[in-house]
Image: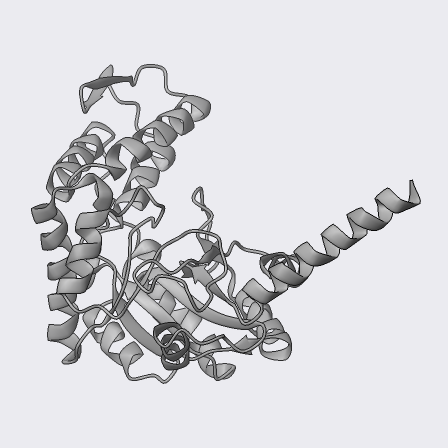
Length: 327
């Protein structure tokens, strides 16, 4: 028995050493969306300012926070990252990124890469998933419509209590996610008329152009593109993808008067981009492109789909545990 245990220990020890060889010198890229105190947050996108501040304090004291240029250098040159490296990123472009996240980053002399979906910039229009939350979950309007048709599927609207509203909300999101943007906008507007809910919430707005420009001037921020109207690119034709990506890049370059060389895929799972997407990324000369797959980045990671860990509204103790699990 002792001989068997000894052999098992040797195998485990070998596996651990091999693991350390592969992952020593890796980087955990963190994905945030919002830093604010949200009254409702069904997608769990918001981190409170207090928790975000605690996250940065822990990272500054226990990890090697990279700038965007440093991260790009290690990945492009296929070099090992410094031990316990971390990069901070944000998706979407909510106004609170500028109003609440940026001052905390500046306080800690940290830097984040902000990927901006341009379709709702400088407007009071909500991101489409927030519009669905407002229309379906938060509207108290008793609609007289009995059904709503989307992609040939009928959704029952009669007798909607809170439970049924949430079920409807969860059914609509994946169906709308894979639509082209113009059709999705049309269907959401139709739903808004049915529920008599059309006004976006100021708490959920995207940045103004002026806020975006001011953010770009900060050493704590680097700006990247994130499509125009945030579709799942993998569900679109080549031409539809190109329009979404090119529009986003052009708007940002026009307002910031600089080249945009960073991009992140909306949603970012392996179903949300494909060979067409990668072809467009390369043709448009993007240098680094982020996915949303929970895995460490190492020197051999593909620069056109580097991986990230999604961050929730964890307190300091939970954040510390999560960071340990990433490495």
